[in-house]
Image 1 (cartoon, rainbow, N blue to C red):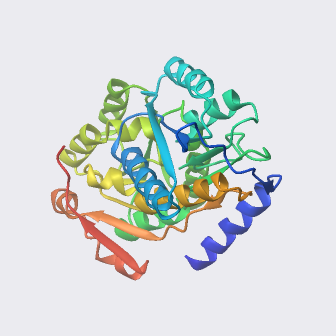
Image 2 (image 1 turned 30 degrees about the vertical axis):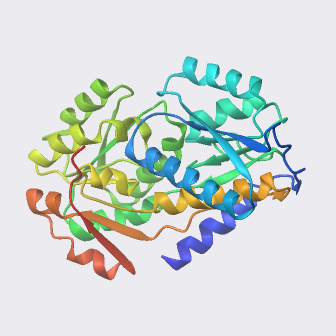
Length: 327
C-alpha cells in the first residue's frame, strides 16, 4: 500500500507540472469581505460532505485572520445547461475564487473563468484526463482511486470469483481511468467482466438489475451518477447477494459492501486550506493527491450478503465499520 501511494504521488507530480506563481491577494468587496463561489456538480452525500467541510474550514481560517468570506453556493444538478449558467453568474458577480466540486463542474468553471479567476477544484479523480493540469490559475485536490487495491480486496474476500460487473456512467470522465485499470487487472487475472452503464437514476438502477445472475461482484469507481442512485443499487445487489465494491465511503454508507479510499471531510478541509492560502496571495502550484488507504465496510451489508470482511484487517492500518445510513 505504501509503495502504491508513493507511486501515485510521484505520478501526480509528474503529470501536473502546472505553471507556478504567487497569486495576488484577492481584493475585498466594499464591505471588506471576499467572495468565493462553491459550485457543486450535483446532490449526493459525498459532494455534500466535501461542500460542508470546505465552508467550515474557510470560515474558521477567515475568522482567524479577521476576514469575512462571503460564500455563494451553487448546485448544477448534473445538468450542463445549469452549470454553464452558474459559470456565467459567478463570473458576472466578480467572485474572487471559484471552488468547483467534481469533474464536470470544474471543467465548466475553468472554461468560464478564462484564466481571470483562480479555480481551486475538489475531488477530481483524474485531473490530467479532465484537462485540468498545466493551467496557471487552476489547481486543487484529487481523490485518485487505487483501483488495483480495491480489486485485491475483492479477491481476498472472494478468491473463487469468476465474473465481475463494472457499473459506471459513460458520461463521467473521472470513471474512465479506473474502469480501464479494472479491465486490465481482470484481464491479467483471467477473470471475466460485464460492463453496464447508466447516466440517469433510472438507467443506473436498470443497469444494476441487469447484472443480477450474471456476476459474482460489482466494482464502481468514484462515479457521481452511480452514487446518486446508490441506495437503490445497493438494495438490488444486496438482495441478490452480490457484493458492491466502490470508490468512496459514501457509497458504503448508502449500502454498498466495501471501499478503500479517502475521507471526504479531510479532502474538503484540504481544499479549503489550499483555497484560503491562494486567496491570501499564496502560490498556485500543482494539484495534491489525497492519501487514501482507509478501508470502509458496511456491516449491515456484510451480514446480508454473507461475505466475511475479516481478511481486510490484514490489508490496511485502518478498517472502518459502518452501517447503512437512511436519509
